[in-house]
Length: 209
Image (cartoon, rainbow, N blue to C red; front, side, top):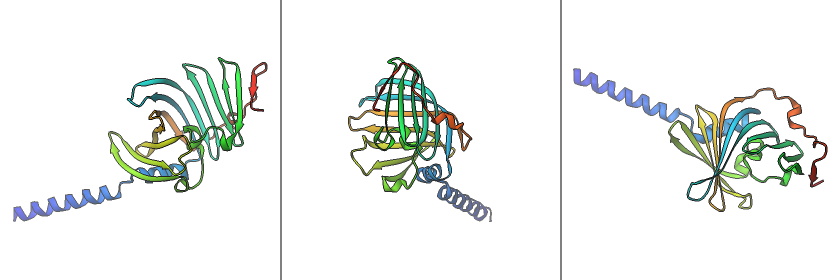
């Protein structure tokens, strides 16, 4: 009788765990939620660029603001001051050290960079092959393979922590990886519209107009 009871309990526990595992969202589901229900994000970020051997060749940090569709602001505070602002039509890149502003049309300004990807809207499946990659540590990963091979990146991985966007990794054609990690991220917050407007400071060179 006891053996039968223990067998029943073990079987029920196994079925419960299997059901929970089946119901747990994967990276693709988290990715779909992010691109369909999250309309704005404000966060601090750290960014590192790694070479093919995963050696660090560049590090930076700052604050980002995103509002769909196609509005974003990335303020780099370290090691060099830089502002990247998209107002929905144009992208402004202001290098404070060089005292230079570059302006381009949003449609072809920065390609599939982290800024453009995260602020985009529409069906990801039209531009990427999307699949879940399971869990690694505290993150649940999704992979995006661009269908357009001219976008600058060959492989994109997005990691979610408890369903919230945490890490973005993008590998280019030279094997270099750009990794962006978010901190203190807040979703669907109101962002001052002035964040997405840019007026070149007096006296700086403006290239592209």
